Length: 248
Image (cartoon, rainbow, N blue to C red):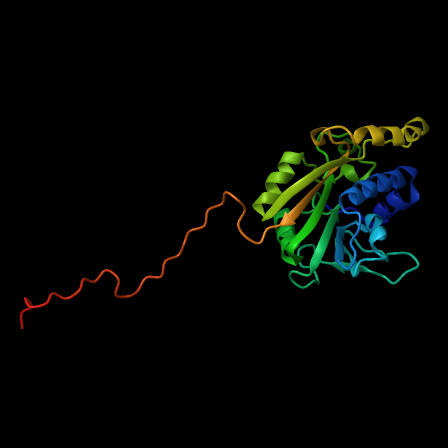
């Protein structure tokens, strides 16, 4: 079940906790992808709050928002890049995307396998995707007052398996949202400390969300065997005619 775009916008742009979450997620993303010069960058779900740093140097930035969620114009004060689209049928040619960011897209999808297939389709050879999902073991997944309390939370292992099944090679995992998901003043004041400490803990102890960077595989993943097809002639299996002993 997708959240309403108005609720997402109010959280990320009009609440103190949402702006802090936006900062945490964006900083972690930029640690993995510091630039996208000359590249095509696409976000799906509600990835708009994270993509502004790429607007200046990227060849193209597009924000896809699924129909059940709704769409809002973005970025403010600039030409619109937002597109309302079907969840598993994007208006993008095959193999044209260099970087793909999913935020509030995978965990809320009713057809996650079809969605991952569409992600694979639009990425170019060697293209990279960043999947941002709620951490099943984190506090944020237990609070329905934030967008991370909706949908299907994941563990790092669960997402890893699902990506590999759809021709993605997971390469790096990082945690995010280590602060307490509360608007109370005492917790907001401590948010910076929690985020700094969280960067040094193992990904398995990720905070409210974690990110998995995955590369599109053009060939079958390592370990998956592929049968070699042998051409068979219609005459295969017939013996050569005997010479000299044949009856007339």
